[in-house]
Length: 71
Image (spheres, rainbow, N blue to C red):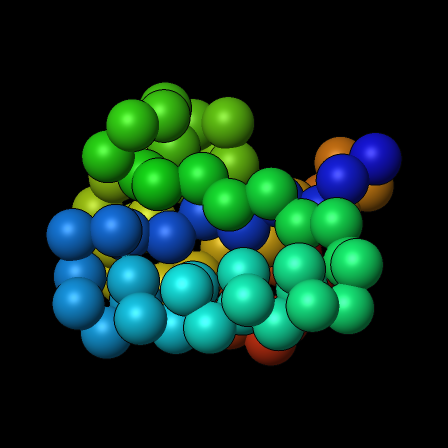
């Protein structure tokens, strides 16, 4: 299963960070998926749009990790 990252592409800081992570992952042949909260339903990650906009969420093996803490 591919690890997926939910982020806010409308946020210049978030978008710059994700672009960095994409380049890093591509250069090292690491498979990550990146989901813009403005183009998908954030409920996929178990959060609403406001929660999704406030911090990065990672979906890995069916679990969502956010803010360096697991649920």
